[in-house]
Image (cartoon, rainbow, N blue to C red; front, top):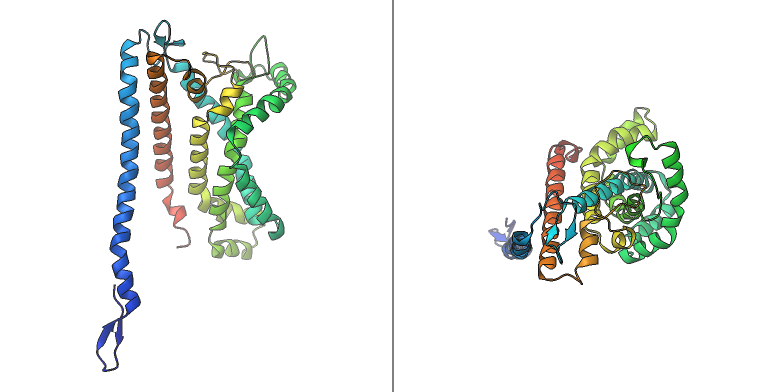
Length: 326
C-alpha cells in the first residue's frame, strides 16, 4: 500500500520507498508460488518414478509383498516388505524414545538454565553434531558401541527377560536392534535439540515473568509457560528426527545384521531396515531385484509421508499454544 506524503505545493504524493516496495511485491509473490508448485511437482515426480519402476517387480513377485518374510528377488522372485518395514519402524521409534527426552532437556538447559558464556558454545556444538557424516556414526557404532553394549544387554536379558523387548535366548548383544537404535538416537538428537532450543527461546517473556512474579520456581515457570508454548515445535522437531531415522542408510547398514525376522527382542541379532537393505542389495541386484528394492523404497516413502501427515494433524490441534502471547 502506497504511503501518502505532502509535496511542496501541498498535494499528495507517493513516496519512492513505498512505490519500490509495491513493485517488488508481485515478483516475490510469483517466485514464492513457483517454489511451492515446484516442491509439489518434485514430490509427484518421485512418487511416479517409484511406482513406475516398482510395478514390473511386483507383477513378477510370487509371494505376498506385505507379509512374506523372505527377500530373494534375484533368484526365486519371492520377496516381501514385512520384516524390513517392521525393523524400520521399530528402530526409528526406539531412537525417538531415547533421543527426544535428552534433546528436550538439552534445549531447556541451553535456553533457560545455562549461563550465556556456556549456552552459546554448547549450542554451536549441538549444531555441529548434525553435520557429522552418517558413515562416521556407523563406524563408531560398530567399533565402539556394539562391544560396549554387550554386557548391559546380557544384564537386561538376565534380569528383565520377562519383558518382551529384553527377552531372547542364544546370542545376546552384538549387532542388534538396540545398537542401531542408539546410533540413530545420537544422530537425530542434534536436530531435535536445535529446533526445540529455538522454539523455547521464542516463548513469550511476559508469560515467564508473570509466572515468576506469582512465586513460581524456575521449573514451574518452564512447565506452565514454556513447555505448553513449545509443544508444537517439539513435536515438529521429533517428526523431523523420526524422518531422518527412517531414511538413514549407511549407519544402520553397518550395524544391522541384515536378517528378515519380525521380533520385538531388541537384544538379539535380528534387525534390518528398508534403507539398509537397499544399500546392501542394490549393487548386486538384477532388473527384478532393483525393481523390488525400488518398491520397498516406495513403501518407505509412504510411511514417511503418513508420519508427517500425522504430525501435522497433531500440531494443528494445538495451534492455540503457538498463538500464546500474540
